Amino acid sequence: MRFIVPEGARVLDLGCGTGHLLAALKPSLGVGVDMSEQTLEVARKKHPHLDFRLGDVEDGEFLDAIEGTFDFVILSDTIGMLDDIENALKRLHKFFHAETRLVISHYSALWTPLLKLGTALGRRMKQPEQNLLGDSDFRSILNLADFETIRVEWRQLVPFSLLGIGRLINRYIAPLPLVRQLCLRSYVVARSVNSGREAPTSATVLIPCRNERGNIERAIKEMPRFCENQEIVFVEGNSSDGTHEECLRVRDAYADNWDIKVFQQEGRGKGDAVRKGFANSSGEVLMILDADLTVPAAEMGKFFDVIAKGKGEFVNGTRLVYPREDEAMRFLNHIANRFFAIVFSFLLNQRFTDTLCGTKVLRKTDYDRIVANRDYFGDFDPFGDFDLIFGAAKSNLRIVEVPVHYKARTFGEPQISRFRDGWLLIRMVAFAYRKLKAV
View 1 (cartoon, rainbow, N blue to C red):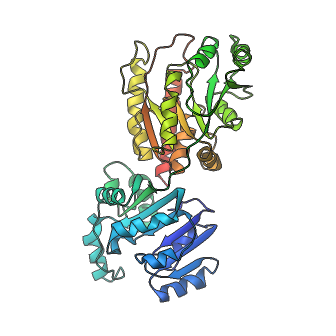
View 2 (view 1 turned 60 degrees about the vertical axis):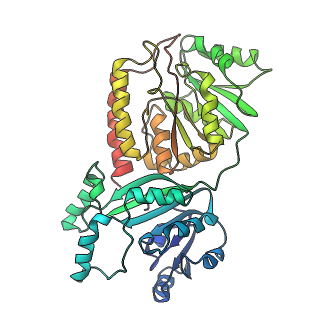
View 3 (view 1 turned 30 degrees about the vertical axis):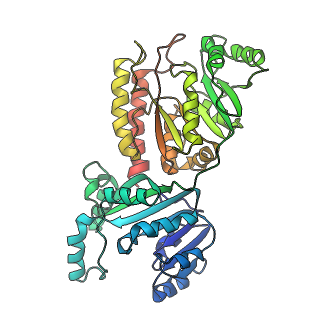
């Protein structure tokens, strides 16, 4: 739970018990609700800095008396005891702003016989009869209650320490495919579809470029107008073919029609270029377009529409849907993309078919959240792609893919070494497993 909910958030815990979980999350504002006065007395004594209230989470009048919105609304082991799950969830929308996340934790129905045995043997407190829900049931009910499931996590395969062995199994073995469905606990993260954001009116298209002199003016000529205020930012990476000079020429030549900025990197790599460009961007929506133009500039409007209509919060291009031009993606690249798509879909628990596509789009406010969490991952990614992808997953953003037409290069050479960078990607898979799964 502490991986999902960062410190300093505004948290509403419905079914808080003695307040142990709420206190462990270290919220800036923490409100806990429970039906037991005796339990709440313990909570208030242990955690006097938190706000605990006596009430029924299915009582609409009681919920109406709780004012304000929260960053996270938590139902920890509460959902199984609700009389009407759908209606209870519908009442929670009043606590949501556009970035609020609903987090539901519950016991797997597979473990019901063992849990009942534990109760009979006196190893577990007696519980009322629970609703038996699988992951597909949760997705269905959340959809009926106007929530969209973002991801599901499975944890705790061994509910005992076993001299530390249980902890190792739970951390490294339990999250694995096939094994994870056997875990004791599931965590569902969802967002309200009724709490949309205002449509953005400005965007920045960032074009990192190195030795791409022949594509600079073409990018401007092919760029569509898709919002009211649109700027283009070139970040040039110390080219040897005059790319920086071409960026300056194009900026001046198109000054009457486009707001163009040009920067030069002090560091190296696309990741550094992206960070520098976004730090100097003014748009509400931040967009990356690779300067090789293998993803056509003309398709950037589709990405903006996904953000503007609230269909996604982190939008990634996928080159694996439409037919590709000859030589657009060599065989080894295609195999690598398919492999990493499977791996990263597992790591992120969201569909990802083309992690290596450079076209990525998100709101600046969401990018700022990724930056705020960057210390968790550290400076690990010279590409820039996985810094954003992992950050989006850690920030619980809804990830959506947009199919693009992948074209063959018309100028210059690829900026990557397939085998060297492929090895780096394999290292990142291990890194991501430690940071996103083995937590």
